[in-house]
Image 1: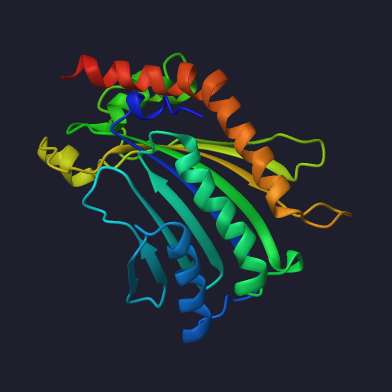
Image 2 (image 1 turned 90 degrees about the vertical axis):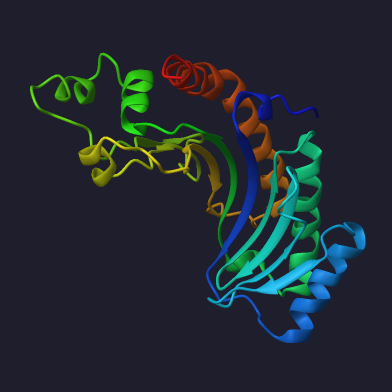
Length: 250
């Protein structure tokens, strides 16, 4: 599967997150055996470290444009990929984590609180993020009309919505745009932050009411949902207007 999403933004990420009810194991032998098994199939994933908060991370060289990572957090197992040429670059690692987690990390379907597939697009812009988001996505809305009042300025504009993709509401999509502009920058009229405008699109699956939570089957469906929403809704209705609004200010 080729990836046309990377060309539409400055940075593109795909991340899978298994959110658990119980804490994941932290024993030395368990964690290292799990990471060594991943490294065996993906040899470039050979940088291992422990964060100050206790999370374990196995990753490729983050100085490269494209890199992958796996992290073991207290109640979350993550696998991600930055700027993949091919979506299989991300999905292959994520499928391996799903295969290994039950046997090497003791993950039970009973322990899974939810499964997320998140596509993130970053847009570099050193200016007022709130103005870009307002012009691109909120024109002719009640929110935009608030800003027509004399003397008003948007200090925080990070719209988000959650929709259900299934009748039982257990498959959901969350779309969010995050501004990094703060009040201090607006007061001074000086926008020096190098943080991007970020667009997040997450497909979340909660355990089914009656059936066993089949993580791999759900993951495949979520990937299909994510690609479909990106092509049919996110790119035309969110990404292109954002990119156009940014281009007009450069």
